[in-house]
Amino acid sequence: MSVADFVKGVVADVLQDMLRKSSASKRAKRRKRTSSLTVAERLRRLEREAKKPAKRQTSKRKTVNARSKAKQRSY
Image: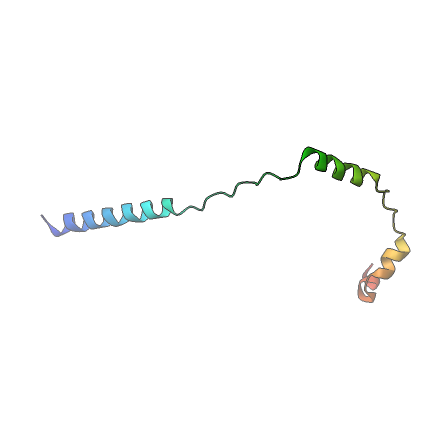
């Protein structure tokens, strides 16, 4: 057995070992947990959200005044 054959064998073994290790170390995907809410609780939450009045649009002046002075100058 020559030195070249020995080196080829070692290189092949190392490459196979590296490939095998890299493919096995993938992280498991996290599963989405099912919610523990009952159907009645879900409906109650949806109805509560539906009862809330719509938000009023803020005036442009209030929005501009809430900004920092430096930002107001840039507009």
